[in-house]
Length: 303
Image (cartoon, rainbow, N blue to C red; front, side):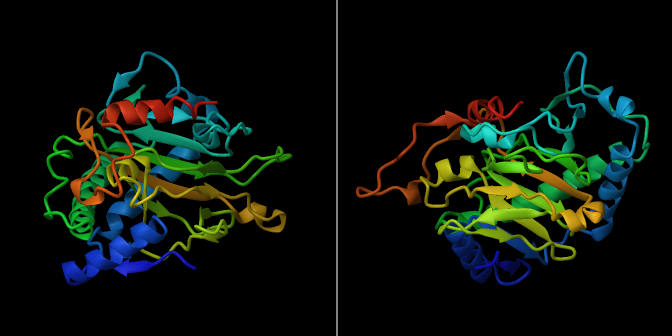
């Protein structure tokens, strides 16, 4: 089994069927034909690469203070353990990140690189458009009107996370990974990632860990717990992780991912989709707002 690669530029009915099959079987897919200009992703990747190259003290200036919504927040190496969100106690993940979104509390824009803010804002706006396109395909795949999700995403609470996985240095602790095994918290995640050793892996239904290929110019899409809840587990969220590179490849294993979490507005109520419920398959979850759901998951992951 491999993560399917789907060209979403074709006939919407055929594409929706392919997307629905991928969501139901694995919860992961890679999309091409998405219409996002390469230079938008390249500028964001270049700016974040320059940020992560800054001295540690400059980066940590964005990790503390009085948080303000809409400003970036830096998370240093080992400050988060994603496996903890599923109750697994592990050492801190070997990654650092810069998080930003209109509803994300943070501490300020860095002075360097000066291009970062514009690159982030352009990427956010452009990939939001891809998210809207994917929502329409999801709706079709679930037997819903194409605009079914639109009201919940009016004023959406999406956010970005640029993640740097530096080459591992020193002894790796037992159970430590670049990103511990977890499911994402929200609706859908849209990733642009480098091709480097020690990469993203997804767990198949039979328990095997599958490497996710970084197809040039593509985006990797995966479903989060919120979508699983919305679809009454018809489309489950899939466990995934970022592995430690082999020792003989560690020196060339720096890896960067730009993550876009596409989520509804905070007060949107996540209740079982009507087409995912019937007398033999009643609702498994109580209604919850998007904000309540995200906060309950995120609070468990901070190391």
